[in-house]
Length: 193
Image 1 (cartoon, rainbow, N blue to C red):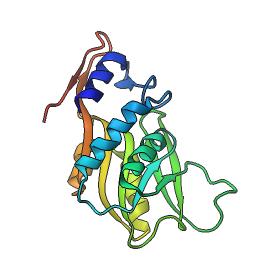
Image 2: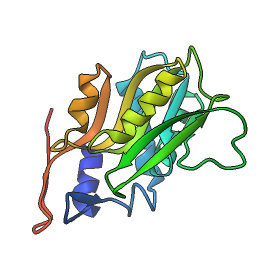
Image 3: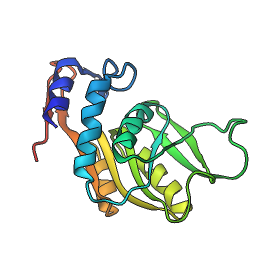
Image 4: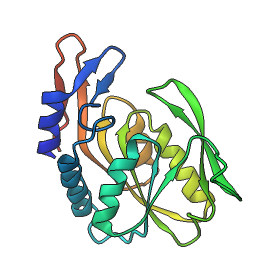
């Protein structure tokens, strides 16, 4: 998606440790016009796929997932990183190691919102080592539902996550795949399909 790649080149900041900061438009301050184009692109890429739920993980994936869900006219469910009093009853639980935060989280979804027969599209902002998507896949499988695909805004192609998820036979669509980044020069190169 050229619009996204251009925006990453213009406003993305490469930090030491293979960190790409896109918080000015993607995961802190959100450019809703860009999100609309992202939503349309995921709709195009998953056209004809039966989807009745979108699942993401809090917090950065929620805004994107909402715009994508609007395109598909389905609800969004997001996995929470902590159980609150608002989540009563039984939950599906998995563990996720966060690349960005360097820690392990329990993620949970109420059994009320994910179940047998659901056709689930996973949506997230980044894919690096694949741990967040693996955790979401575990939740879907525990519910007896089906992962019909995964949509990622930015994939770090030089990290193993994309290969791991594709190796599971999941239809993965990444809108921008970063091939390399240089924290000294700020240069970002993308994989061309």
